[in-house]
Structures are given as C-alpha cells and as structure tokens.
Image (cartoon, rainbow, N blue to C red; front, side, top):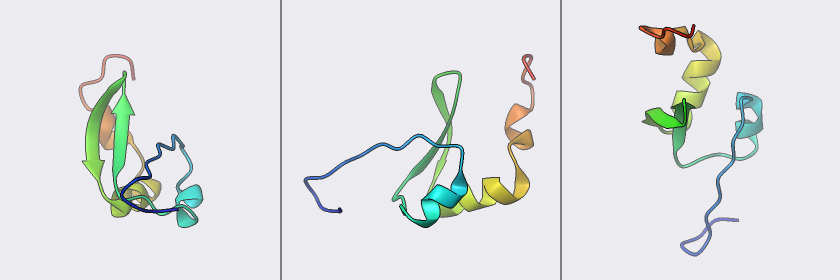
Length: 61
C-alpha cells in the first residue's frame, strides 16, 4: 500500500517489523519530541548501536 494518497504512521520499538514494512522516513521521539530523523538505515543503525548516544545530557537516564 503505497501511493500519493496513502499515509500511515507506525510506532514501534522493533526494527525487525521494519523488515516487512519498509519506511520512507524514521523519526526517533523522546519526551513527545522528534530528536532524530532519517531513512530506513536509521532504524538499522539504532538496532546495532542502541540508544545510549541519545541519552547524553539526559537527567532522567
């Protein structure tokens, strides 16, 4: 299901779901805000490296 008249938003913590549903854009959200954006490669990179680099300066851990 792709096309100019179709849009969807999928929220997941599981990159393996994105092996079946290939996104055009990936956003990382924290505290209700988008803190990082990229293509499908961003989800794969986060699966490999984790989210630790996004916690820098985070008072809440």
